[in-house]
Length: 357
Image (cartoon, rainbow, N blue to C red; front, side, top):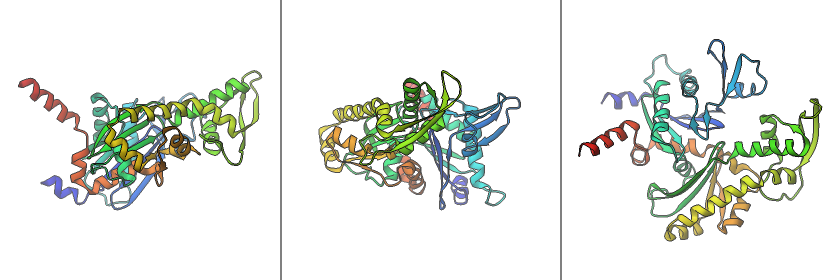
């Protein structure tokens, strides 16, 4: 009863806890935070120096006593303490402009499909320790489908491909549940690594992670472009150790990323092969929806459509689909309780009850 009373005054939050970016949706305000999932720490004192964009700008530029770390790998918490501090920073940032006293928020968090019970508990504990009142975990493709306004509760097949920073999540959704799915650790970060390896193998050029990402965003593509693009690639010559600049074109970068893109395509086809024929018929008619930052790669929709022989469309503002989905769920508690994953405590109680019987 008290929970319901305080709930009317709390600033409930929807969080897309991504490998590359963390986005926060505040009820009645919309998306209030969209920052990189990076934290800068002073190794001597353990003090948090910067979070988000300010910390990302420090990557590759820090002295020995400062570390700019990404606490999430493939959407999974790799550093619990740093993730907790990052979440606390974002939650406090949202509440900074409000009254001095506000009830703790209810939080909905998007998580990867293949999360284990231990990893699920880590996300819940991090959010609770960061100041959440209640924590609901929702599978990211489900949240992305809701954010893309797909009819997930109807008896029709909806196929969502969420290409994030650390993972690509492929899911067929019907009647409020995931029917078939695939999760692979090939996404935006892997494409960045492809560019780094290409520069090293082809030109003996050592690239920074941020430079590789910038090249991918500016001239990277999955399909041939109508007008060729070129860009200067700057790094350190591995032979002389001196600064070096090379001019590269979109065809070279496309070739560098081709193996990763092909792996995503093959997994989409594999997921379709596992899908019941009735749902495949729906998907053939309705098409595949691309979400996540990777959907912004030029030509990604045409390559997937050609390979799967199914229409493919990119969702409106694909980068924010997951967090917008969590925001919609904040306003629809009935749907949230239907599709949210069981909490780790519920899982323990259920297993105990089964053991008792």
